[in-house]
Length: 207
Image: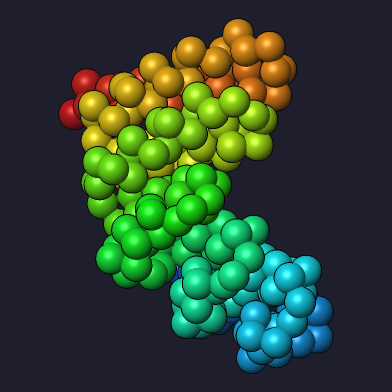
């Protein structure tokens, strides 16, 4: 028995070291045989499609792409600004103040991605209201994005308890939506958030 426990302990230590090594790994120097600087140059000199491809590729370089991605928040194309806001949200980059400026963008999709990115830096009521509003929007793309953003924020602890409840309530209104894509996304996200709440409650009870 002691040998088994010792073996399990050694395995756990090895896994911890392996995971730490993975986290410490540098991002790739090249993507599609191109350096970060090449992709960043496309953001300044390329046409809209090239800029959009660049802003979707740059997150692979992690925090090394922070400057380029933050510059893309000011791109003339709303599609590029949206992708940049989503990217800096996923990576927790960009200053909260810059993201709050984007909450005034003329395009609702950009405001929604900016709201997600801003909430990654801590609670912000106007950003949260923007996301909840986007869930109710009368098309497919924006509600799907908002539902996905709220699920990520809820699972990663970026929403407080009240906001989590309001997010679930907003999604619940769409679980029987005529658009099956929205209905499925809402159901999935609600189950995911409730499962996380159940796991947290179970862990608290064990303690």
